Image 1 (cartoon, rainbow, N blue to C red):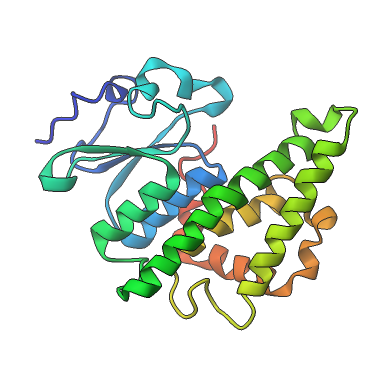
Image 2 (cartoon, rainbow, N blue to C red):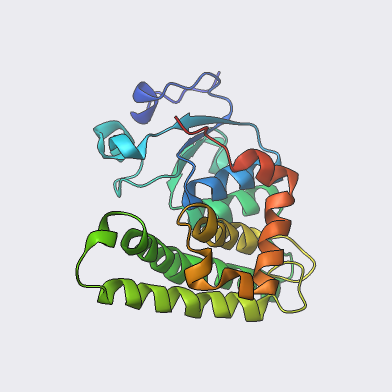
Length: 234
């Protein structure tokens, strides 16, 4: 039987089946990237709700796995060299799962790197900028008297959406005919602009037909239908 006792996080969120990959997450755009990826690749996993609204990521148990205090994080009981392996950062986890299973990442070296390039585009641009926009548009920052931060992030969100719209012109998926971790990294964040922030109108999402159709295709995938609700919200 697999022993995960060396990971302190398992004392706060015990594994019911330590032989399965353990996912510590919350259904945010970053969180559902990984749950959908796990559904796509077909790895058995066990999901643990880490309630970010209760600051559970800042407890010592969670910080023992991710010192940056952010979801998602995983423990793979069958990691490199057959040993349990912990990992955080959603982009790194997507790449790890793709390489572990041989899925969601093109075999051709050039296409592989191009896919990873778009994952970095999300990690360095889409996620941070959309997240800041959401803060200033819907959450705590919406009441700030100075609207310059909102204007800055709204304009940047629009610019990034323009990059996505251009990329998806004539394409089914980000890499053409193959659904990859590039799609998985980006679409939950674009979806959140409408579903999470209620910002479709101010960002002109309905004026981006390529982007809108692509997000709808992503959501319609069976893995997305499950993974978008893992772990279930409290």
